[in-house]
Amino acid sequence: MTFEPAALKYSMDALEPVIDVKTVEIHYTKHHATYAKNLNTALEKYPELFDWTLEKLVSNLEKIPEDIRNAVKNNGGGVYNHDFYWASMAPGVSGEAKGKLAGAINAAYGNFNQFKAEFEKTALSRFGSGYCWLSRKKDGTLVIHSTANQENPLQENMLPILVVDVWEHAYYLKYQNRRAEYLSMWWNIVDWKSAEERFINAV
Image (spheres, one colour):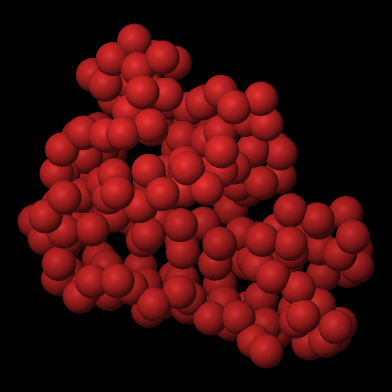
């Protein structure tokens, strides 16, 4: 069974005006889809790996045959990270974290505004391409961290809760080089309900 990008839970224009429809269209149907295509091509040499989940592939790279390991890391990571990015957003959901996740954020960062400031700082400090995550460590604590290219928290033995994509193709058509503006606007489409569900499942 081949890998495909997870279906979007909203229409491509639903994240307007924060993320324009053209960016979503190109990002999802070109970048995301190409990662899936390239992952499937890499796995054709070892078809038994199609029985693995995407999570298992990207978190057990040492078990992947060496000749396709880098392709699986980059393209499998590309599919996983993009699936997670699209699932982290939704239209009409502006606000703050609530419930148990809000309590954990306040415990870790003092309050929601301090959390936002730290998250944006980390996302801005990612040199080049990558992602900024809110993840849960095995001991239960939350951590804000960034990963390069298509690396992800599973490879650091952490469970992701929320992510923003800071590759330039995620925001360049609308914001050009203004990553800070993109990040500031992004909070208006963060799906805290799904983040709360992921946090509870991680616990």
